[in-house]
Image (tube, rainbow, N blue to C red; front, side):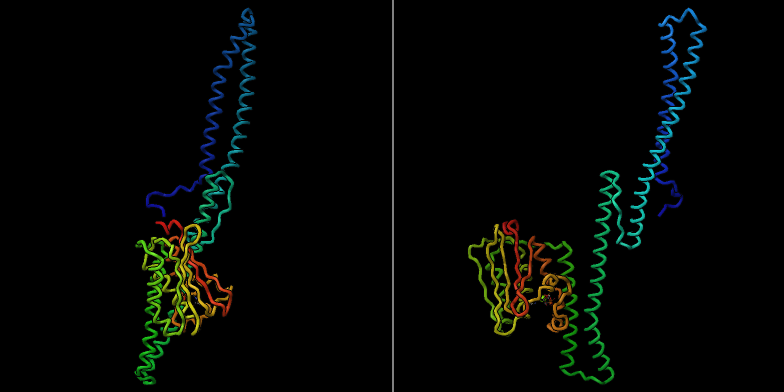
Length: 376
Ligand SMILES: Nc1ncnc2c1ncn2[C@@H]1O[C@H](COP(=O)(O)OP(=O)(O)OP(=O)(O)O)[C@@H](O)[C@H]1O
Ligand SMILES: [Mg+2]
């Protein structure tokens, strides 16, 4: 926007640059001409006298006149040619700079208009221009990616909201019309849908916080044994109720390491919750912790359950991704648990990977906390 009273000048950078260069070239030409006019005749006159021509003043005058006119002609022609050549080269260069800047400006206008796919081709006009083009392209690519993520997130959230809201609305209409009666079973359905909405709101807040990079970790020194015991103790009842064995194996040589106890508890809780959900009665879920080279801590949660097909493995950490959408939703999951888990592990400077030998062969989630973090 142009401030009122400050009309933006329409002349571009290229024409301003050309005008400036023209001024410099003309000044240089004029200066050269004046200096040559001041020095040339005097020097010529003294050379004539040294050559012994003083006895013939008419010849000296004639020769000096010839020198002046020859110098004036050659200087004028050569300076005019030099000025024209310099202006032609300047015109070419300034146009090139102007075109490159115009391309950046057009691309920036596209980005300002919400079209984040704008790209600037490298003008090869020096390091500064190349860096400008690279930075611009990196910026637009990043904006493009985050816009795509925002759209996907919104559509995922809308999709997740639709089913519980539709069920609640249908039941409420049924109650109003007298088709349904308020039995304990109806209340249970209404409650289940309401809890699903509450859980979704909670998970969304958690994943947004975890992925924002603003998570403040309350690191304390803990042993792997403490962490694993705390997680398995809270899960023990649900495992017993579902007839799934919960085993642990912790390397006793592990030195205490600095982590946020609650967040890592949340990570293990999510992994154990998933493992239990996808392991049939009689199966085993094992949590192990050991020293991983060089000096890092490796925590693995492994189950003997359903397993995950290779094409789904890379996606399970994405928000709202569920391998079997209908069935996993029926289990009550919103598909955000692993996205939160990954963000929490990464906030600790660690990595998490999933492996599975395929359907029916169980799944294993491996967390690696780097040596720096383990020692901090
Ligand atoms: N141990 C596992 N065995 C088989 N599949 C799994 C396992 N853990 C996760 N998955 C698959 O990965 C998907 C994503 O898991 P995630 O924890 O993110 O979501 P969820 O468990 O469905 O829901 P939420 O954790 O938000 O309650 C699950 O829906 C499931 O299909
Ligand atoms: Mg889960």
